[in-house]
Image (cartoon, rainbow, N blue to C red; front, side, top):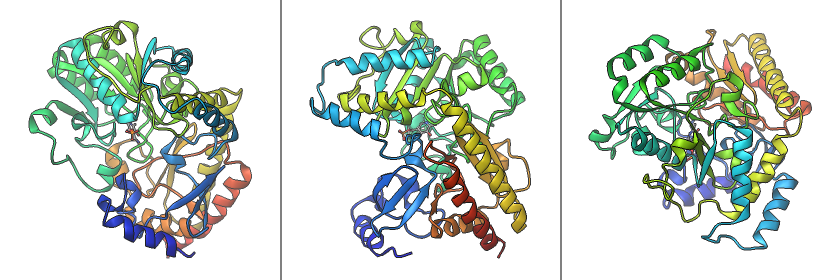
Length: 429
Ligand code: PMP
């Protein structure tokens, strides 16, 4: 593959953008090499500026659940932009979006639109603190909730990829208020709440961890956290920025049958436009300004073009059987990857919940952050590049989940598995 144009752009970018990118994991730092620059995207494919084509398992890190550049979403955006780009005053699409979200995720009796997942989680934590009058929060090792100060403690995604335990620039006085727990460990959560439960405003969790590869919850784990939060008056926040509308139409809370107090969203609800949202019990949400005293605002929040894209996307994911088909494709991909690795003599296990999957270079079943980070990263990096050379783009880090879209049909999965059979041989050496 020729990467001359990408290389030229990356060279230009590096003197102008920190690390040459606008978001860290894009820089390929942990896998090595240089990123490709995208010219366009269509269906399951990305095309770079050198005209190479890749089957894409990143999907813009989640939003592209119906494939890239879907006609219905594009049409909705075209129609919306005909009426102007931003109003700074209410518009009907915001109300329709709120109706849609509250109908599809019943734990959200009211919602507030924001512009990113980061804004959603920051706002949810402020609400939890404001509503309880407490200051401590709990998060889980390897979970990523955006780049808000309180969350950059033992965080997943880029921080894990780049080996940064906590970020310089976060005042100790603030990070000390973030307590961390090992994910999927019932006893540790019970013990922490027994000690400090009355001081904990909110517990925020990715119900399926997607920022330390992909780790599903053990049976009963989320239920246990629900019970602890109820007992201690702590606000339970499900960060469904990744899982929302992906692992099931109603998100992870519907899939596992656990009702949080607040939920944060991003990605899919913007259809690829910059959007996030948070929502939850009416009594909590009614404390947000201007209904209540807890302040949160946004000039571009509820942007009409973003609402149009998101609404079109949410229409598509409601089609009967949509998630079952996606889940079946993901299961087929994971089974195929495990078989291909076994044939090549490479130790690999996979995890999968709906259209989210994980690929671990280990022979162990992975259920914890410690196990996820103990996998063979060198093997992953070799596999990543071997796949890329064969036209398959996986997330450029061993600590990110993979995402499928409805454009990943059987022929795309077959082509991926064909590439994987060769790539595992490269890993074996
Ligand atoms: N929460 C989760 C679970 C995420 O995966 C992400 C981003 N990948 C965020 C929050 C932050 O979202 P954003 O990048 O839109 O700020």
